[in-house]
Image (tube, rainbow, N blue to C red; front, side, top):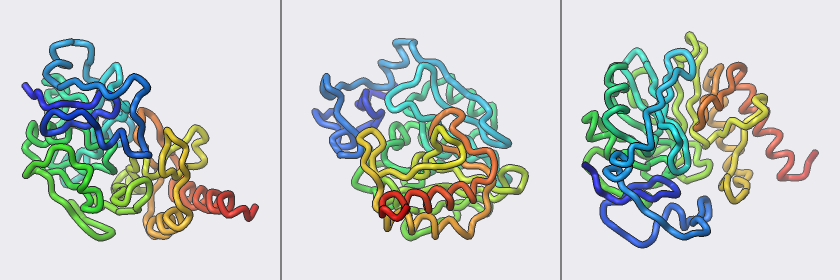
Length: 270
């Protein structure tokens, strides 16, 4: 069983014990008032508190996480593309039940992660399914557990399969990435966005932030570039990082409208 240390606050797994968690100490996250605390997957599995949570989130998209939530609480998304199942983002908790349920769905061919807050136990996932992890090289400094399964990519886009494309928007983190699946939503397209493009309570808009918990807005130039990069892509739905945080219709319009509103507010042009 894995005993590599896992941060209780953010879920990042490190290769060896340490006193600090760089992910939490960064201004985009936070160290809890009670200080840095640690666990590991072996202890969590032995505790028996967490169970697999696997639920359909949309056509061909299955959420994978745990109940109760652990650390930040995001769920991963299993994309059932024509090229094979692919895991987008990563949930921190992993045990035999989670592995069995994903295996029943056909397993996975690879993993890609939007940004370092969701790197968590990615190496455990890669080893469990014997697949590579695709991360943008601009975020290499945040890798807590280096491993040969990690494949760094550079530039603005990467076609990880014939029907799935990673797009580096640079929002939230320099390597902040989204996944475009043109075959999603019955061919109308789906954007899987983590919280690089964050689905908010008002499903007619999305948000762009440098830090969500500390309420630091993203730089206008970064948001403008992100909107420009996404403009050529068709997508009906947007799947964010949380259970059921989904824009079901007019996703492309929602992103463009939201970026325009954001820029108007931060530049005081309303």
